[in-house]
Image (cartoon, one colour):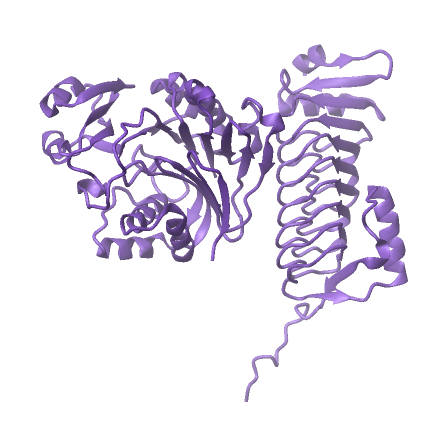
Length: 240
Length: 317
């Protein structure tokens, strides 16, 4: 904490704090973020693929990570708005509870894994297993998502502005997936469902929030659970 | 968990800095596997033609009888007399971190086994030198003088052992044939059965490590005439498990991931180099990486570059 105190530079005008990864450890950065007053603006510089930046924060901050970041960016947060000016590694926004994570680039695997709430916006593409085990909240990806996205997703929404890879929505529960482009293949127990007026209105709001000009809310493919795996079928093996 | 790094230079400007760049990349991956590490450097190619397939002793395939070859050698005895061994073999000696690189012709190989049965051949090749040890990457790079080395291609691996012992022999890279270097992040699940099949074909092993099986499978396929791409396709059919593999030869550099892409990989492409690492942070200090095209290889896609040639991306059949 002492090192962080010394190296945190407070600019007088906009009350914007700068935390430099070149001089601060990840723990020092997260401790410094936790100590900032509600509503503070912070810029984290020189991330160079650093993991675990801006995690576990319980109050509202406006955080900008200025560069390419590593794993678990913005994870476990309950309040802050995190913006990344670059790409991120695995599991951005993992277990997000509230607040937003916006990535001005691509995301690697498991974007938004197990998120319970909040909004995650990927302005590029996301890799495989995006929204895996999603439990709430929304994940909007402007580009494509990789294989096994929304695997076992339980609640919440995944919006894909591009194409979805193989086995989309495998073992899906109550989460809903909207895809603007092509779906390479559906996973086990996923099915395409009719797009209702309520879906279009919801998607319109999400598209506006994400700022995706290229996505037409009325031209989405909706994927939901077929619910055939919900209950064990005792008669299935009866061939006599 | 393990960490992989690799650097395949496309222009000679960075060659004097290869060792320093690979050391920095590997140190950045220390958290992914701090128990042992190794580095391969391709440098000073002796210039002989690439030999045809032949069986060599001690499981090194393709050993020629008349061509000049570099042997990266290791002895557990720190007082081992490398000068005497080199004199007896009539080979040029380059001491490296208590061990040695001997440069001689292929015919010294059987004599080496007789003269110094406790000496282990870590690698052999026209350009390849391999140094590996137990400990943290930075310590090992310093011990073997890696930061000061030049070269045209380099590979590094830092290991977190999950399936076999932590020894120097079990650490990566594995180099089962001339100039062939294999590093692996992941775990193979059927390596015992593949090992049995290979042993029945006459392949012998040094360790019980899963990656050694993959490395010797590639060497076996290539000794039968397969090119690197075909050998990797054969590996994807035969071997089950999780893997990101970085495989290099005298003139090629290839990355492949398993069908689920369970283990990470990032590739940076610039006009000066192709760089690969388990995580982007290992690439972040490379010169010009801000302008690089950075991407993740898709499952079972073979990304293979040939020195002097262009880039080719091929999907497995």
